[in-house]
Length: 258
Image (cartoon, rainbow, N blue to C red; front, top):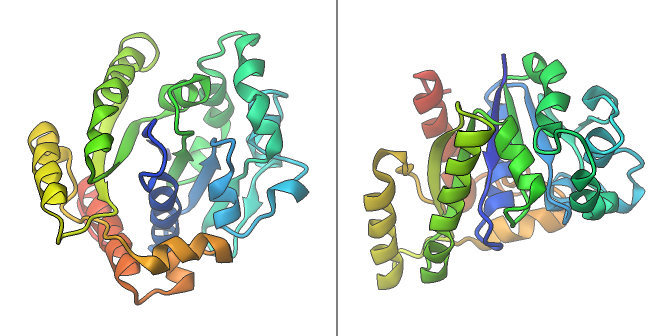
């Protein structure tokens, strides 16, 4: 049975999609069968894997709003073992459309149930908000990975996100756990970055991954080429960090590295 993991943080620009896309790519490279679900109306994970949102006729919208099977809307990517349930412009209206659906908080969970066993990991890239799409993702997930930028403002929304996770645990998904916390865009020369990293480590204790993701130009370039970093520049500092993070993730979840 596959493990469903949401990548969530309501603050934008914290490296959420970058982390989701690149961990998905390295998991696929490690031989895991991975489905990336782009639940962000901006569709950055979709374009980051080389798809043009405007040309997509099928998407996650067709699944959660029109009730189509997931398998009819999944696309293969250029990486073996990596598949995507993409987002297109239609997803922008999904929050409103979901309001009128029965069991509106659990639509995604019901949709993913028939395909969960077909993948090792199902990774959901959540929107930068705590609306119905994110609630659906958390309700469907076994765990959540929280990317946090090592800057002051990133801490401000953290308590709100943790409260949302607690509410989902209480009312929708008792088995939801925090899988881990990833420090992103880290600048080791910055005193404030070091201080915030220390605060986050105190708050999350063993949930914080040891591997931190540095600020890296090649990482920020990769999406414009429609490629994960392992295809854009596998030897750059950012690529090495995501490779190491994925290895740490596998050791924690499966008790071994790849």
